[in-house]
Image (cartoon, rainbow, N blue to C red; front, side, top):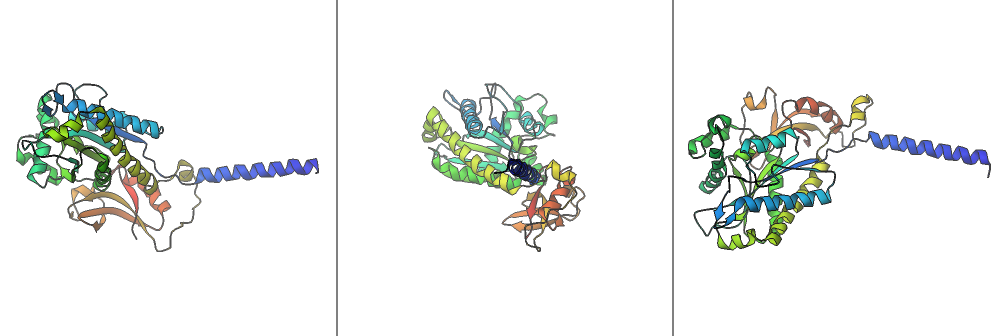
Length: 353
């Protein structure tokens, strides 16, 4: 074979390879779930719920560390941040601040329940929202009561009194831009909870929980079981059982991450610099919008919660999903996304039809 021909062929193949690599680098990447904050409830001078010598703060720390290790071992690219890794007291507002400052994509707060009724048992997961039952309110009052251990808690929490039911009215006025995603993860936690040694599924609930209040990302609070119930207690205090609980939460995280990485979409830096349009692969009639919140109430057109946007909504179940803009492709919607995120940091692109 002619030597010059061989060299030329190799050169051409190299160019093709480099061109292919360049094209791949220009492919719009999916957003990845890159950072998760794991919050072990209570700690230090706050023992949480207590049954004899068994303390909630010890159980939550054990499960939190085990969960974090599972994520770190299976997803090395995911940054795992703990609100505490030892027996120390962390104020509720600081827990949300840790997540916000680190631009977390998901906040998981781990707790153990307790009730005056010793027969109450099972596992449940809360998202931020109005408590719609007395039992939900009691859980919220129990979890929120820790703020009385903080200095000047009244000013930190805008006059909130965890013992006064009227204080909880303020939560009904709050928007929750992340309700849909929070509910999604919470549902997955409960579904995977069939692996838990504590078998009763108490479902997904909404509650006025201060630890979730100011989180600017999807956030849940998981109640592993009731320390006040003798049957739940024997499973809560065993290391092997705590590993199993961490495993089922991890299984939910894995499934949630797979969906998160697939469904949320933004342009790469290369594409922001490239004026050339890429033709959308969807049908010409398909439109996209930018979802800014999902709430369980209909907002007025000039609601302050919309922050000046003339938003539209579509209803799914009991949720009103508000979005802004209509774009012919994901690419066009993605270009507008950074501006919307200035007011709604967790906004994301959605398919409208």
